[in-house]
Image (cartoon, rainbow, N blue to C red; front, side):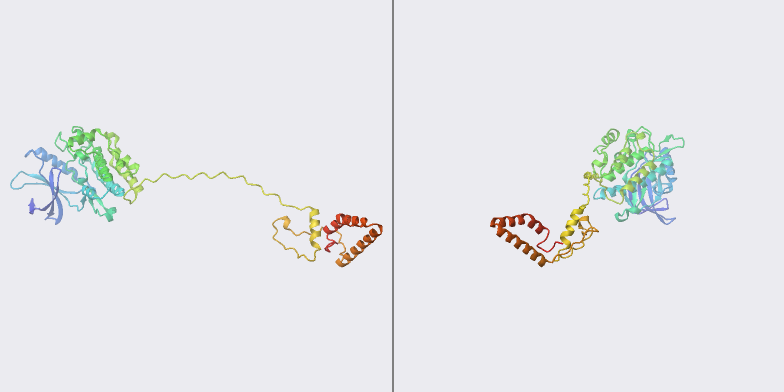
Length: 425
């Protein structure tokens, strides 16, 4: 498109977009040597009606007094004409290099990261809060009127949001009475993002209508689709007025419940049931962003699995009492082990139980005289010969009885006591 001069100062060399009763051009300010954006307002209609032009001038002044890094700055307001035609107003604004939010949504391969949605939504709330504090209602909030600078996926943290086109705003005087800056009785806005009170057309609107439109924007950002869709605009407006929206989590199952609550609260049919201030919405978005982190999607954490209760402790079995041998057993053990020359001295194990302790003879016990084994065998043999001789003289049967009696009585006892092994004392 050929370059042209506007009002002898601004060189127009390319269109940026159109809408809101005009078209926007990229231009260069020949006086200050800077690039600017110029909005030519040619859609006012009604010929040379001075009332329409006056409304636009008042509207431009309302926007010009807004000061926020998230609202496009207005540098100048003027009028011009082309080819001796009727004069039309124009606005000179700062030129922003960035991407429109609607193009970011269409170009995304899937749902946007919740962290980015909360980040951008919070900045939109800052712009709306500044405008509402000054008594200005946007009335046409939509992704096409939101510009994101630095929309690089690798550096979204430093991205800055600018809200554009307050060209169909509504000015509220200090007493709170609305003064329409648009044609009386007309429906102004975009149907896909229009609040129920805007759809009625004859109902006064305030800043809460912008919050409803913000809810539509957030719904689209987290799900990739609009809350209401229809092929005819009047059917779409009827849905905004009558139908409840489907919760966003139906389209994005991993969406946390807190996002559902906020977006559905913004989409309430009655303004009194919505959040009342943009600052409140910004605070809630900040809380959501803190819980979301830098993730593309937040999944619900599975319910914690309770560990089975531990089995009841079994009653402990008391330890048996320590074994304590009787004095008789100690004496017998001492008798059997102390006089055996062939036995080795017992080992000394660790003292863990009284039975393992070495057995000693009681103090003061009489010590016997040890009989040599050969002498004991000789005496026993003489005793047996004497018995045999007597038995032979008397009768042979008596000998057999004597031997058996000896073996059963004294011989068995002597054997047990160690007479024949040399262990008797």
